[in-house]
Image (tube, rainbow, N blue to C red; front, top):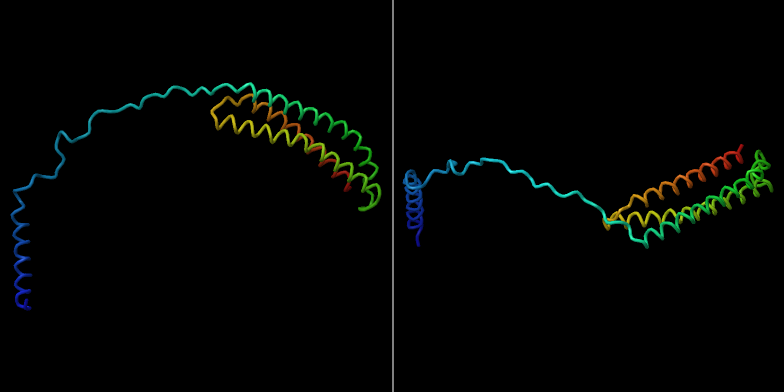
Length: 170
């Protein structure tokens, strides 16, 4: 095929395409929206029934009771030990860092922190029960109440430890 033949074929193609566009005016339907294609009316979403969580299992409630009792006993033991540690810290207040009195107070406070860890472990297990209940769609109100009680006890313990440490550094 020569260059002249290719040029003629290209011109013929352009002419045919142009004539196709010119004849499309009356042969095709309009693309405008028809009356029956317009949206009318409204649609209300159906109302879902309220979610009612399943009650907590007896095993969960039993475990919760044991953990809450453990945390409560740990709190009582902490308070008793804190009463014994307070005079040790008072004697060491103002003493030099590294002195015998200061070291005894540090050991006594470390014992309190260890006592607090028992309640913190119980709180971590209560948190696990709470997460399990929520993710399984079970009722978690009683677990949340127990968690708040134990968390408040640990907060009280933290405050006492901080006060004793503050007294020691005076």
